Length: 81
Image (tube, rainbow, N blue to C red; front, top):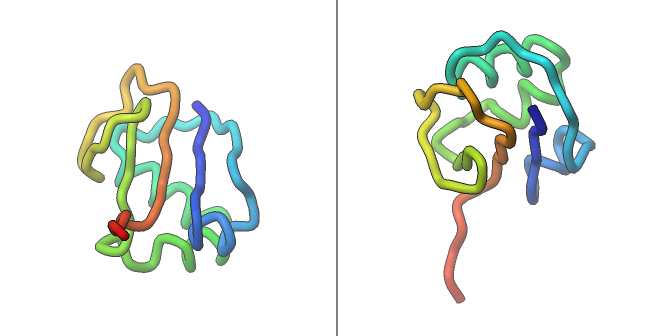
């Protein structure tokens, strides 16, 4: 699956996107797997309340299943203005 990072998430991880193979069943499982990779992922995902996630371009939750998902995007909450 393709994993996309936006705004400060991208800055902390140092990548705009990457293709990964995972056995994660939920978004939360994916985050745990990513955090176990390197400290930069742990820093980016330290506070999940400050993040949003979209699965195949639809807003979702961290407990959402990943079965059949092709794209996961992580980003901070959007503000108007």
